[in-house]
Length: 299
Picture 1 (tube, rainbow, N blue to C red):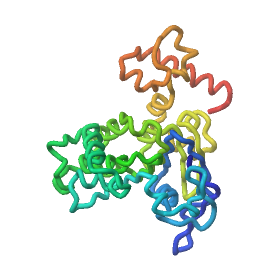
Picture 2: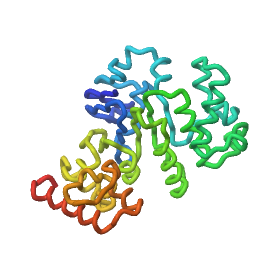
Picture 3: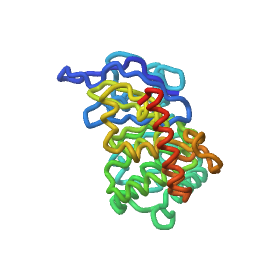
Picture 4: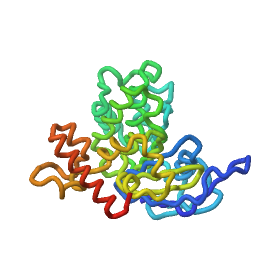
């Protein structure tokens, strides 16, 4: 669990970067810090593992205030993924992925097994890439190695700062899909920074929308869409509202309007359509859901 209570930070110019930010992320949830450039997302993320110290407020990881924890122990329990991978240029792919397990004194065979497993899951064949160096890889491959390195020691917490932001759109979608499919992330507490609204709705169980250093609203994607806290929140999503609704709503949300249609209730409408379920039936149910929200004054 990660909890922030009224956390604020100003830099040398005196301008607040973050003002009284509060939110809570339960174990196994993925919170997306969403907002435009300069909204305070990255500053907030970096305070969690003490890369930046807050001026005021408290930050808790697994129930303990971060300032009371040994810095080394805190960071070894947190995987960290950067936009520009941050790989060690003089280490091979295998050595980069195995860095933290090595620091934790895993034996060599365990490290080798873990490295190989992650490489295969992230479409980096061991025979081709284990002994390659970062400069020999494409941008997408470098980012896959960065993801594998962050996950190698199986940390309970994962912090991600625009992890797919440096990739071209096609590669970005591919790496994002591989990330979503990883068994290793299913029970982790994840906080991810992005400015990409579509990405936020695909990956987040919850979204914290920020603007000018302040939290505008925190909630599930559906809550932000159908029950916006203010005009800013509503306008932020208006441009892509139709697609976002399909990505935010699950079959469970629209089940009352689906009659006898069967399907996994955890699927989003977007994924259900992609899986070949009847598009018109699903869209009609979404429309009925939308109308029900209007009737109750929640949108």
